[in-house]
Image 1 (cartoon, rainbow, N blue to C red):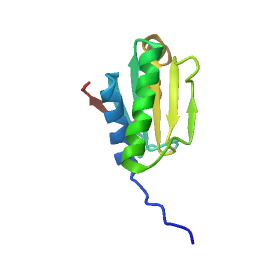
Image 2 (cartoon, rainbow, N blue to C red):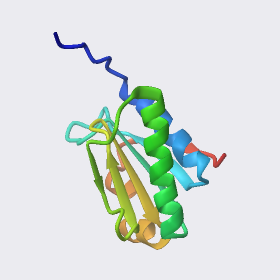
Image 3 (cartoon, rainbow, N blue to C red):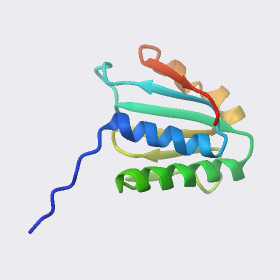
Image 4 (cartoon, rainbow, N blue to C red):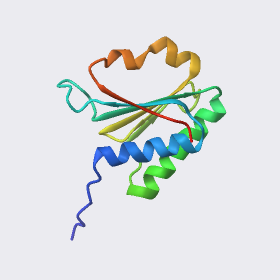
Length: 124
């Protein structure tokens, strides 16, 4: 017998992600709502930055913990933890980008999705 897995809306997952970032004082937290963009790869991108690799790893750990506690989900893919200059946590419909400050400015990922609805969050 297969158990039915409860589907958690991507909006809720993105909220859990933001809370995890706030717990570790991530800077300039932004949620891009990509649901109305036809060619988007996810429903939401959540983006923040930090000053050090140590803080970036702490934010990534906090996000994973918050999402898992609230939904039982783990990221389907994680990238960038070795150098911790740009970490990506992929929850399928929600993709988390945690940048080192200079890398965020260089890549300007928010500018690539200019049509997205943007929501800004305060640090906790």
